[in-house]
Length: 232
Ligand code: DC
Image (tube, rainbow, N blue to C red; front, side):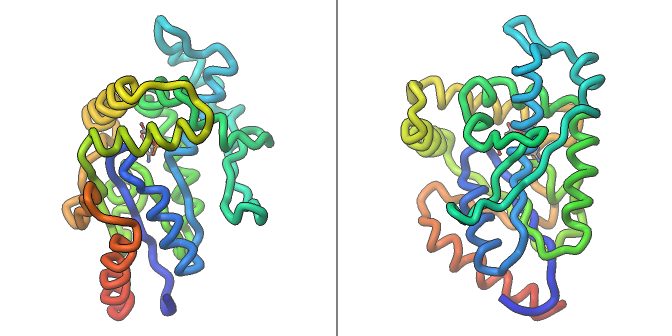
């Protein structure tokens, strides 16, 4: 993949394989990959560890007050050849994927001040282009002028099985039913929140990967990439 560098925005529902797809595209093109879900997850982990959330809900005022104390970075790990999420200098890559974080992340990412801080950071990361970013609002809010926008979807029951398998591999003790419930709840919150709800950008191309492999998705993407890059 040569030529002028572009921005590739990948949005879509939870557990549609956005990260694996985006990471592969980035590897192939030597672009930077940014997992924006990891950023919202890191903010959520900070809130859990600092008692800013509990079963009764969120302490929104305190969360906003604490935002200036939250520093998120991605650092490349050459052993596993992927970048990992750091929260205030600590590697939190595994911790941010646990069920407790998943249960609170949609509510925390709905806070407008949290979004404003993350969006500013994401825009700074993409200022030189050559970036693949995945999330929920990348093609609509973060980079509305991205040269390629993809909107990923898949059936909820298929997404639940994928997520369940991943969590079991990480040693989590969960049931398929609770994972599917969490996915459906997150879909609802993500698409109904007031600030930057998850929605397809008008010029995004839909990718439904319920029944297609990652290799097939890459072949599909390559054709799009080649035709866009030719026009640059
Ligand atoms: O992609 P993920 O499942 O790791 O994302 C975790 C949560 O973060 C998801 O429920 C919605 C939120 N999110 C968001 O609101 N905006 C983004 N750009 C990325 C994620």
